[in-house]
Image (tube, rainbow, N blue to C red; front, side, top):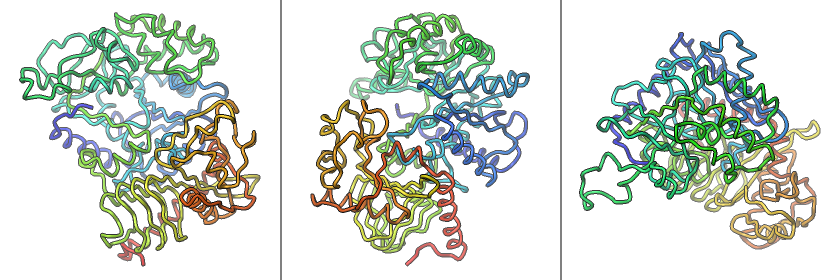
Length: 590
């Protein structure tokens, strides 16, 4: 998004991080922190995984204490979207705190879903993605709680709704971001028009004062992922206040216009009660509701019913979707809608492998703002030629003779002396001790599984640029799927896998890399790594790989079989090993 002045933003970001760090592991005082922290999950299995990780973080004193932490999974059945998750989570809170809820400040973080675009977070969740800074190590949950640290003390009781994979950094010139107005209040960030086409865009009343870092504005309507033409027609496009008055030669014409895009929003408890009554009247949700697209598009004096018929951004259209949207529109129409414009702000999204690699290894602005490091709680080679300073290593143990190239992230892994990792790779949760060369733009991640009461392992590998979500409707179209830039059909032939109805798990009308049964599972982690390396060699050399008759699973199935306890135990053993080495002054292992 648009480049704000970095001075105040840098200082305020560091101040918020320091304030949160001071709260970790101690009892939060009334008004000092959230009364309730809620994380949503896609299903009961993910809910249990999140609960285990939160309990571990509390036990290790990585989170503020004395806080009500909850995880609520969506009810079984059709996908209900983050709007449906919001409604369901609110009902869970109402049942837990029937009298107290009206007085609570609540943060609700949407973290359901299986992270198909950031698969190193698929098993344990994007909200628990490790970040390369902090002691103890920060995860996305910590960062979200840190950057919003000022909100609870400047907010009326209510619910703040946000997502697990974005970061908002901002400077307000000393002014408080106050959520103290009735109805719904959203944050807005100045952005190029192109960014607006993939986000929500606010159509605001004209500013009544000179440019400020923080402005409270009235919103006329909210547009969900609009075209540039629609932004112009509705009056969402405005001149960049920072360059008004400059000549064309003094400013970049492409940045002379901007729109204000969304990130999070707040609801007062009066609005929460309206939504709860709607959920009770509805009885059950059988369609995807978008907390942004369906709640916010109903707001503002210029809101219309037109959006209720638009299904362009819905993954699966259910018959009752339009009717439910119309009910929400008439329910929320007339609700007061305010926008807090943060003119000096930055919005970062870490929801894809490309974004993850860029922000952790190459984004010098974010590195400065958060204090990101190239090595955190790790044992790494001390030879400059073996470990690039532009690589990022998080809680990992690397042999002194292994090689890691620039723009690569290694997390929760062990690499042996004969391992060479190319550029722009992600290695996650793995132990690679065999001689191998991981080519550029590779993704490697090992998962522990529990199958029929037995601990098994499988190692996922594919190209960073592969599209795991791309799907085809029949086996005859599988040739259009690619892995490592090569036809999946050709790769299957090299791996000795026959194309049949048994090749894909789950929905047979949606065939993709995500549900392709191509990854063999074994009784040991080392065997699973060996098999994936052999598969990769076969693609590169165009020669067959003999992997025997091992059972093959899809990523979709691996997540159903995932062994959370074993994966977290692997991380703990790695932590203890690194801690022991650091205590005796070892920073490099030969």
